[in-house]
Amino acid sequence: MKVKSSSTTREIPFSHDPAAGRHRVVVVGAGFGGLEVVQGLAGSGVDITVVDRRNHHLFQPLLYQVAGASLSPSEIAWPIRSLFRKREDVRTLLAEVQNVDTAHRRVTLRDGSALSYDTLVIATGARHSYFGHDQWEPFAPGLKWLEDTTTIRRRVLLAFEEAEREADPARRAALQTFVIIGGGPSGVELAGTIAELAYLTLVRDFRSIDPGATRVVLIEAGQRLLAVFPEDLSSYTRRALEKLGVEIKLGTPVTECSAGGVVVDGKPIPAATVLWAAGVQASPAARWLNAEADRAGRVIVGPDLAVPNHADIFVIGDTAASIGADGKLVPGLAPAAKQEGQYVARLIRQRMKGVSVSLPFHYRHQGNLATIGSRLAVVDMGRLKLRGALAWWMWKLIHIYFLIGAQNRLSVALSWMWTHGIGYRGSRLITDGNVDRRDAAGTFNKEGKAID
Image (cartoon, rainbow, N blue to C red; front, side):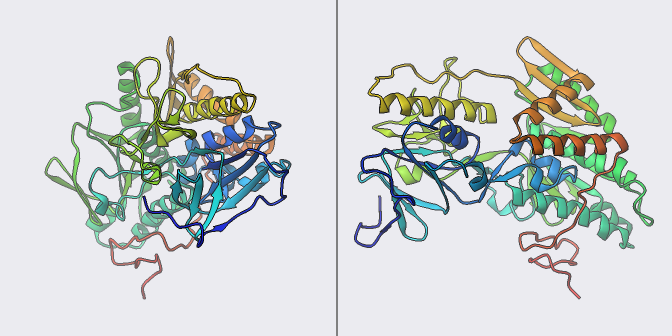
């Protein structure tokens, strides 16, 4: 592994110069798992450095709500510094990790500086995976980060705006066709929220087009939607989406994806907006550590979530391939990342006290939830299985509970009450940006600027 030599690397000291000998914990990633580690180490007498490429913690389960114009970005994201402003033992660095020198316990950042650690926790999450078709990414953006929500929202709303002034019927139909690839929770939720946006929210906003003529197509290569749910809930989800107006195509993988749409089962579907919700790939943490990884790039960790042969390095969340007590891979869900973060924090505290810990991490599955739209959802919590309006209320309450801060919980609750009470989505703003390349009609260039 190539690492920068100590003679050319600038060490970043802890800002308030703590007493010599304090244990140094570096947490890479401020997602659910990373935050739990930091919170679990409060009062432990260690110095903690949080490193993240973004300056905010993101509540990812509600990303699609921002993409569908139900919520604003500020309602599901919080500045990392504000979360720890009362913690003198915590500092936050806006930076990107380039490598890890495991021999010298140093994390190298992209700007050439470095951080020394006694314990390293990597919780960097995952990114989109196109299963070998990375060339599809410009045409089918995924939904993983806050920037993705504004890109997708912009594409969706721009499609209606372009359709409003389009004279060609075929082109207008393509502009009003939205294809979502992937029938997991994210795909189901995106399909439902776009259908509601078109059929309920925008129905009176346009004069030349009929938003009710919008076509929403959900494509899943497998044989059913929500494969991790029981089959009866999957079937219910399909019926509910079809009643909402969503077309479902199962057992038919996409073979081509371009600016003009997709090809499924040899048949083209002209669509100006294609969205990806089919898979994820772990961050490059395995490469940083020169560690063994599975096919999705996740670091294979031991029962204590530590990297084999590196007891001082833990990998958690979507970045880790951890086998549960049932012999199955721990799922890449927010509750799992939080439990792993809590476990690692307890382990570090016990090690600081000289206590030998032998109990492995035990994942407690808390269930699966997914909204369908139009006040419907499905909930699978083992013996408790719910569908319909009751499941929808439970989904809402659970997500509000896990938001950070009373003000954010109240803000999201009021936004949902307003949206579902009168069908109005107030976050329908089209903002300019350089990540959107809507150019299928030749109307916008790669920077998203209008072409004269």
